[in-house]
Structures are given as structure tokens and as C-alpha cells.
Length: 376
Image 1 (cartoon, rainbow, N blue to C red):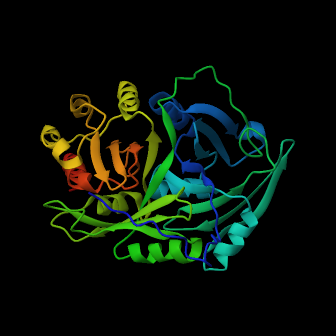
Image 2: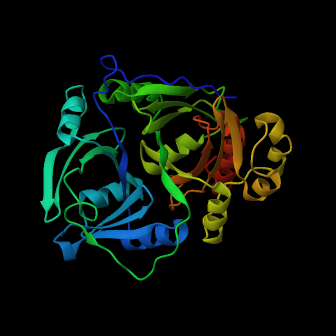
């Protein structure tokens, strides 16, 4: 059973110098934004909302924004060769470039983080149209990933200035996904503590829980992880680094194929993981599988749960418990040609932890996929 210690933000007593309302949007740089948007609509049930490109006055990129409940994904592709976006895709393949955070004051967020050592990415910039204005600012984090702070209290448009409503006739039903639960970053050898310190000193986050190579290891591979959380707990960033093992770990594989640190997976919440996973499987989403024996003594490990083992077993849904309750989780296979970005589907029933009891089964499942790819 996993125990978590929730800590206050590192700041003056009772004051969070970087209050975050939650995740605003995630922007992925991809080779074909239109096809990627279609994939997330078809496979994951995201709804088409907004578009920006030549028709809205952009000359360098095209973006599609799709949304499911509170989860916004922006899929962006370059319109010409030899662009910054194109170079990002050349280096990393399809992947998360922007983790945007919703704030009440983007100027203050920029000032508070840069004065604490953050490298500026985007100075506070007011963007407006007939629906009002948005202020955005940004800082760099690990690898080529950036955080953009979004202040949208004076805006009532479809998404952001420069976007227009996107209303295609193709609208598959959603899959019951609700919000971003957490987002995991992979960093290089011996860099985890550096980035933990960054989130602590620069953004006022605190360590929620940590795992070492004794917690996260198999016969062949290991990794280490620390979970950083903001003051109100709405934004959580686990950070992974490789650890020594007999063979190449999943983190090393990611770093090799992504070309450096980056977002490894996006965990999205649902209120009914069984229905969500059934829907996603029917739409072609592929999940990691665990041996059938995982379920033989499941109730002995996690205690009584509401779900039937006979229902969870064929789906491959994992279960773990902490002092607050239990959670159910499952992980997709990588969604890109490179074995990098994937999604986690999670349902929390009181638990605030991250499935420590499932690590061994999960990472052995990943190793089986690595062996099939010839990268273990």
C-alpha cells in the first residue's frame, strides 16, 4: 500500500506564489495535424472545436484544437520546410511541445518564475480579437518542452484569438475522458533531482512521493521517479530518470528515440474505466497487457473493490490501493511511430497515488513490447 505526504508550496506561509487553476491545453507538434486530429476524434472521442491556419491569417502553421470535457489538445504542423516546428518534429517525432497552464495573471506568473531562474520562452503577450483578449507568457522546462501560462478571464471566444470555430460533420461520440490527471516527463541520467529542484524553486511545487530503483525495477531494467505537485494539487508532474539495469530501460529507449527529455505519457481521468476502455478498444486503441496471473491474488493485495475481477481481467485494467482508497489504470501502447508518447487512462476511487503496486507488472509488459521492437 502506498502512502503519500501532501506538502504545502514552498513560499511564504500559506501563500502560493504561482497559483494554477489547472491544465489549459497541451500542444503537440505533429507531422500531419489534420490526420492527427482525425485520429484523436476517431480513436479517443475528442470533439472538433477550433482551427487556425491559412484561412485565419497564419502562414507558417496549421493547428486543430480538439476537446473532451476539460482536456484540450492542439495538433500543430508546419506549412513550409525548414521551420522551428519542422525541426522539432525532425528531432523528436510527434510529441508534446507545450504544456499550457491556466492562471489568473500570466504576467505575474512569468515574473515570479523568471526571477527565480526560469529561462524565458515567451514574454507576456496580449492577444485579442472581437471576443476579448488573452494574455500568454511562457518559460522553458526539460528538453524542448515549454510551459505557457494562459490568462483568459477577459476572453469569451472559441479557444484563443486567431482561431475560428471548426464544425465538421464528423463527430464520433466521446469516450468518457474528463481531465488531465498528471503528466510524466522523462529526463536524462542523473537529471531527476535537477528538475525536481526546478519545479520546487521556480514554480513552487513540492515533492508528493518518490520511487527509487527498488520500487520500479524488474529482472532486467529499472528507473527512478519523483512526483511534483503544485499547491492545490491540480497539476502533477512525475519526473523519471533511468537507473542501472541489465538491459536498456524504457526511459533509455524513450530518450534514444525522442532525442532527449520530453513528455512520456499523459494520464487522463475517467469516471468509468470499464466503459471507457471498452469504447477505446472498439475504436482501435491498443493497450499494454499483463499476464492473466496478475488477477489471481488481486483482492488479497488491494482488498475489496466495486468492480468484478471477471470484468477487469479481459480488459487488462490494473488496480492499486493507498491509504485514501484505490485506483484503476491502464496504459496504451505508444501512439506514434517512435516508441515515445503514450496515454494512461485512470479512475480514482479515493486514491491519490500512482499505482506503485502495479509497477512490476506494468514494466514487464513494457519490456515485452521492447523485446518485440528489438530495443530491450
